[in-house]
Image (cartoon, rainbow, N blue to C red; front, top):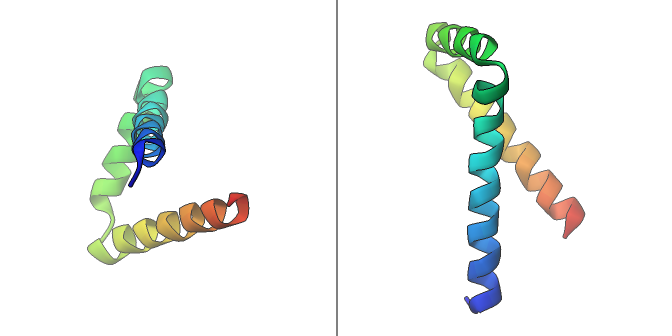
Length: 65
């Protein structure tokens, strides 16, 4: 991976942290409620949410690439 590849990687990782931080920063009470609800989900539900997120992210990357 060349220099441009690493720059892209670190930029993408930075964006992940930015997006992950927006909800608890702007709506901390809503974020807390969502986390409490997520704790109540069975493992299979969490896995399905993770799979959906992976598929959506992959689709976006493929559509933009």
